[in-house]
Image (cartoon, rainbow, N blue to C red; front, side):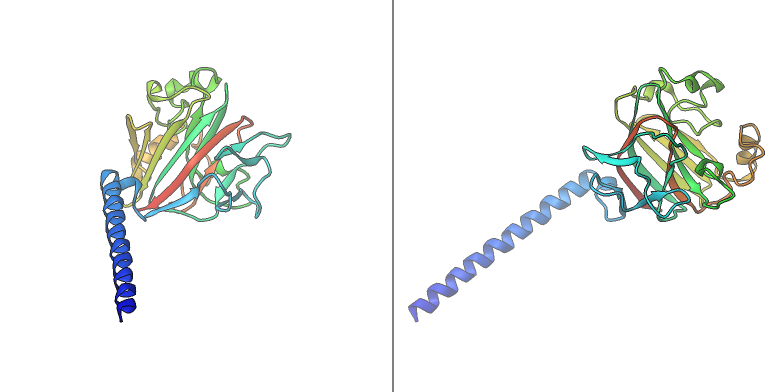
Length: 247
């Protein structure tokens, strides 16, 4: 009888300790989530966490191009002899917040696309998908043309992003792109600083396209739902911490 009482007491003690630890862990998790709710919700889908490229494939390809590899928890594009190795997400998105970090090589150029419509008549992802520019603002020639609308963070060839908020080549930049067709608004924020906004359709969007290099492009910006894309512009570029939240 004494033995049974001792065993029962031990089980009760262990059970109470485990319950107490569970309560404490829940309290800690709640504190973390409340301190930064946008980073700690279950609404985010991880597109790249530094360990696998499974959420991506080549544009107009069922496979991932070998020029894209993983190094030190970053997705790295190393240009090869043949260009056009743009990649896209396997899934399509319409209304979303995309968060990622990028780092460009010296005098390098790349880009982030959305609304990419995949069709063999469009040989490149940029033929349909508008681009947020990735660039070495200090040394790439594109930085010095177009009155700033080719600089890093810009809605390429349409709306410029302030140069002073961009980190130089070799340094990480955090880009948050929000696309909301319900509000007809797109927003780009770089490094948690200034934001630029733009319409996604309608007269104002059409006017911007008409004043850009995309004026006579058949499918440019015409598809609200599409793939997210990353560009091969023949320069080395790094991406990491890529995630998306549908809104």
